[in-house]
Amino acid sequence: MIYARTVAILASLLLLTGCLSNLPGQNPLTKAPASASTPWRPSPEQASHPRGTTGAWDFARAPRIPDRVPIHDGDLRLPELIDIALRNSPETRETWAVTRASAAIYGEAQAPYYPSIDIGASVFVERSELFGGRDFFEQFNYSPMAELSYLLLDFGGRSARAEAAWQSLIASNWRHNQRMQDVVLRVASSYHMLVGQLASLRAAEANLEAAQITEKSADRRREVGVGTVTDVLLARARRAQRVLEVVDRRGAVEIARGGLGTAMGLGANSKFEIAPYEQKPQLEWADINVDKVIKEALEKRPDMAAAWARLRSSESAVRESESNLWPTLNLEAGAAWKELYGSSTPLPNTGASRDYSNSGFEGRAGLVLKFSLFEGFSIDNAIRRKQALADKARANAERQEQLVIEQVWNSYQNLATSGQRVEASRELLSSAELSYESLLISYREGVAQIVELLQAQSTLADARSENANARTFWYVSLVQLAHDMGVIPLDGEPSILTGLKGNP
Image (tube, rainbow, N blue to C red; front, side):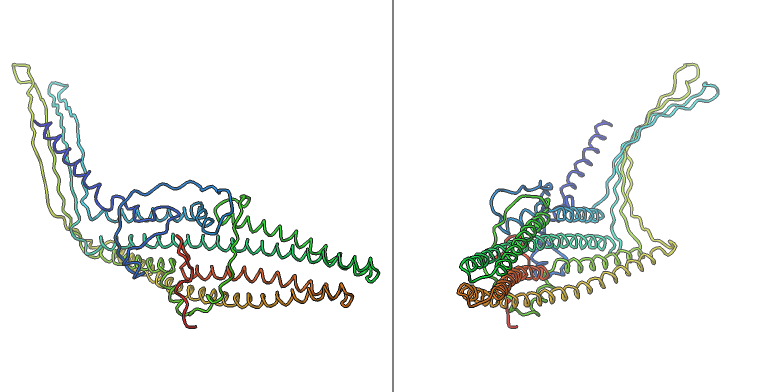
């Protein structure tokens, strides 16, 4: 009977523990991003109010860290490069680990909302001998027990601690999104730089072809007796110079390819090919409302949202410390089943010992009120320290706001300047091509001099290089502006600056 009661008590406690394990908060990792390549998705309320504090979540098992994604054969487009980078990057895995750690801390902060239950048992044997062993006392004690403790009131300390942990988790999630956008920026910029270097290589090869044509024309003029050796030597020197430029451009292409491989989370020596874009820069995108762009950035930048979340976490930490100035009220309860068996000195004239046993249930329950009268001013100093940290977080949020405005303003101006460079380089290239073709014809007919032709050829080479660079930096400036606005697409949104055009 005694053992049956003991087993029943332990089974009930274990059943209660199993029920508690299925409550919300048991797996807080579901509140972090699902993987290192997945952006955090705030609730609809948080999406409409970036400085909000609440959200609804679905509970699911967090997946394992994915393996490195291999590069498949064929030419890779920019979306495929970004996908490989997000799934391979150690930077996103690092911030993902931080978010999961923050989620676990938030789970720990939820613990005071649940009762604390401890179970255990004590078993001990005791024997005492007196007068050389003529008298003795033996006792066997067995006692399973359970204790329960629950915080009823702490004047907001529990909720403030949970809110601080929640806001820290939100900040970690936003920082993860920011790191993903940083990776996308590096991949996109490296991609456009590689495309630009390929365009510069094609321009250098076209310049080499033009130099070879000039050299052949000089040789033909000398063969027919209307040219000089000096013309041939000048043309040959210019052709050699163009050969060196082609060699340099080929090296720059490989360096740019290595930079793209590194941005993708792979080695610089990775072998892959890209599919260059064929579209022309849409210069009307530069004609956007800069004030609207800045407003969009302040609302959508993940690092801006993370700064505000850190401020809210610091303010909650202040409220948690202030709650220590007030008493706490706890419910304490315990239960135990005790069984006692013993024997003592033998009875007179019989030689038999006296045996006895005792068993029964013991229980207790009550309220415990605790108030700290003096703690060496530690509470007051803790409040001062956390208030100072909150002031620091507020200043950091304001500084981050100013930094965002500056970055967007600079990126906007760079994009506008790059657009003007594209237009100017197009006109320069068109004029240089016409000038070179005209002088080449004139030189073949003996009207123009070799120096004039070489000068036109040099101008054409510079125009081709300038046009390739202008197009490259326009795309880089566009991606940089999208990054500074916080609107870099992480999962395939069609347009970077959709809906941002307005009256300038």
